[in-house]
Amino acid sequence: MDRYCVIMAGGIGSRFWPLSKNNYPKQFLDVLGTGKSFIRATFERFLPLVPASNFVVVTNAAYRDLVLEQLPELGASQVLCEPMRRNTAPCIAYAVYHIMARCPEASIAVTPADHLVTNEREFQRVVGRGLDFVEQQRDALMTIGIHPSRPETGYGYIEVGEDYTPDNAKLTIVPVKSFKEKPDLETAKQFVAAGRYFWNSGIFLWSTDAIMGALRQYLPDLTTLFDQGRTLFGTPGEQAFIDKQFEQCPNISIDYGVMERSQSRYTVCGDFGWSDIGTWGSLYTHASHDADANAVSGHVVLEQTRNSVVNIEPGYEAIVQGLDHCLVALRDHSLLVCRLDDEQQIKHWVERL
Image 1 (cartoon, rainbow, N blue to C red):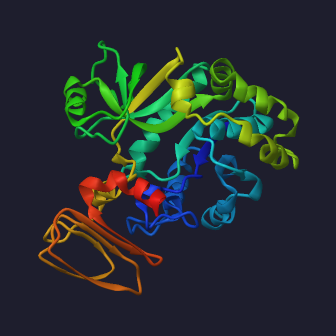
Image 2 (image 1 turned 120 degrees about the vertical axis):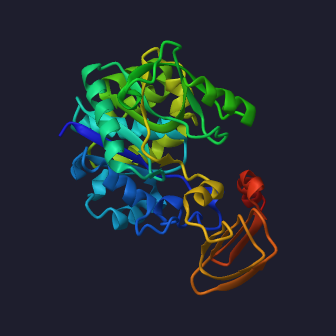
């Protein structure tokens, strides 16, 4: 009962436009056709490890009702509403202060709401091993590393020491030597060949002692801000305090603010069919394909089209001819047609629009 799960669900998933929009972002969608939204699948994935009463979802106030609709097992007090986006460090700090008001000795798993895991049993085994570790070593900050299956340029990497060996690697816990930003293709190939680099999943495990100590050491402005309302967390006055103070929080990620500076960081490496599903290209990788390697959703006729994603909203129909390695997506009266190789530009195009 001392284990908690924090689900970060405040993003808008702009790289998945037009499916993901401000009023109904990616984490609430079933983009893979599994019958479950991303946030629902995330909740069920952690449920064998954490009781439903110990989940906390941090989201935008506009999505509060969507969270409660898709996770009816949660009470309203388990949905924490950020008045604005301030990146992952303030998001996590808010959740930690809230949890500490209820359970000062908690161990906490922090996860994005919108990842894919295909082998949930193995995932639970790896996360359970990590939680056991941080409960024993109370100063440890841990992230879940993923054994890379290809030289991926869309993920950050975790580097471990040269003495690392792959024996029983799935449950081996090792110190982190460094974190690496998203590499170019040649660097990614070198990382995979070295055998000491893992994809950074963005899933974190720690005790309240460890994360509070790290926040106080590396982000003192943030903890000073939240300490002003420490007696309000877990009370009816919590939301008003957050609404007033949150704008003053630094806009910084937990990776930059804490993990890259800590001297007590570890990783447990797993291989459980993980993907960020952060882009249309990653969706294409995991979707089913027709005989011409197209990932198709909707009432569509394809001619001389291959290696493409065509996603058409129910109630509409489309004919697509002569495309190769392209994306066609129609949703809510918005149309996107581009080359899959250029999908990293979608966020910037949407800002222009």
